Length: 180
Image 1 (tube, rainbow, N blue to C red):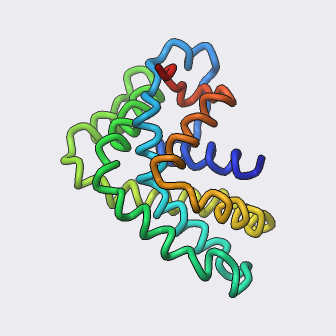
Image 2 (image 1 turned 90 degrees about the horizontal axis):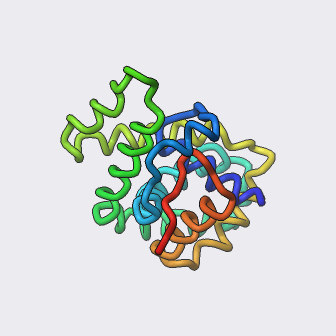
């Protein structure tokens, strides 16, 4: 359950927003494509792993999963980032547009006006910074265990599973389009 909460929180941080909208407002907004959410999860994994390692590294066992396998796991996802960036960017643009206040499209406009590659370093740094703030140190060993259990999944499966979980627990922000 903690891993589910961590994945949901990570998806929200990726979207650069900490505000929650009312369910009625969320229902009126366009849904986000599951494939784009999956790409966003895959794309963000190196930053998520980096945030976890920064926050939890000192409290984890030297022979534990993150110290022994974390770099390899991160590398698996780094190799997928170029392919998943277009979907992750669409996710980010849609989520930002869905969450902009009426008459305040500044963030959405900025993201859409900049070259796609120009915002990648900003997005990566923001994910790592925001996620590291939200990880409770008391949960580091539990999160490490969850990561070690999910690590054998290929990136596409983990991304798809995250989309499935977000849809199954009926997250409203972002609202996920029904899969076909």
